[in-house]
Structure formats: C-alpha cells, structure tokens
Length: 113
Length: 113
Image (tube, rainbow over all chains, first blue to last red):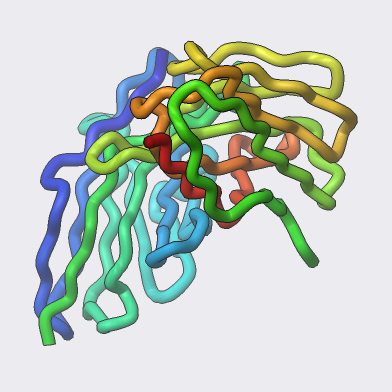
C-alpha cells in the first residue's frame, strides 16, 4: 500500500525565511501526491497536487512542491514565511487504482516574528 | 457553497454510549470517507465509500460502523464508545476522476469519558 513519510513533527521558521517541509513517498506505481494545510480548528484545505503533469507544482499562498521520482520525494517550499503560514501541513498520496488518500503524520509549522 | 457538512461539531460521551456522526456533501461526489485525527498520527482512514451502495474498511475500522444513506450522506456510528475513540473525526468527499483530491468537513471533536 502507498504511504508517505514526513519527518520532524514541529518546524520553527523565522518570518521571511524559507519554509521547507519534506515528504517522501512509497508507492509501487507513479502516485498522485498532495499537500494539505490545516489551520487551527478547521478542516483540511488543498495546497497543491501532483498528477504526472509538470514536476514543479505551484499552489496557493506562494507554496510550491517538486516531484522527484529518483528521490521518491515531494518536498514543499515557500521562499519567505509569513505569520499566516502557521498551521499544520500534511503530505498525502493516492495511486491510480483507487481514490483513497494516505496521509503523513503532519508538520506543525510555527512562524517566529 | 456548503461543501462537506458535519454534525455535531463537538460531543462528549460516556464510555459505552452510542452515537452517530452525520456527514453530507453537496458537490455530487461519488466517494466519501471518514478519517480520525490524533496528535502525531496524521489522519487515518476509518471507512470509505467509493460509490453509493458500497462501503469498505480503511486502516482503523474496529469499533465503528458506517452507512452510505444516499449519494449525499455518509454516517459513522460508534456502537459502544471507548476512551480510545476520543479524537477529531473528519468526513471528506471526492470525485473518482479528481485524482484523489478530497474536500473536507470542519470536523467533529469527540471526547469519551
């Protein structure tokens, strides 16, 4: 079954600094990959997704992620962190055979003024 | 657009009590899901329904039952609540051809005492 690994449950970043959240996937076939964001006391919202088109995917709020098959990775980046980026971020994977999403354990991002 | 609506938003149960969490979507999606979210565990799939009339177990189905009442509604039932079922529950829906992208409700925060 497909799965994703996110390391480092809590990530602290200074306002204006680079945000980098790592995600590695395990799948026997080329997967669909997603990043979701969860603001406090809310549901999950899609940030961006990779579906085998361009390997560099741009999402909302200035985030982007690059699919690297050789590294089985789909890391999320944002060049300059903003206070409003404080949230929990989840990487997720599904494969072409079904519509089920498997989630990583999440990264809680704290932005330091 | 309402999207995915969950009721109730909060619930406290005593051990052994039963309850049903309700979920409805107005996006005409075929697939619906129930996840639970626990600190440090990410989201884990409890049950899903690929289409009206079908349901399947996910990663953590024990202690739960589901009903796909119609295309819009997918309920989750706890027959005899246990403290281990204290969690935040999310309902989600997706279109089969949406390549895994799911839309989430706001969540139900359940405490079992």
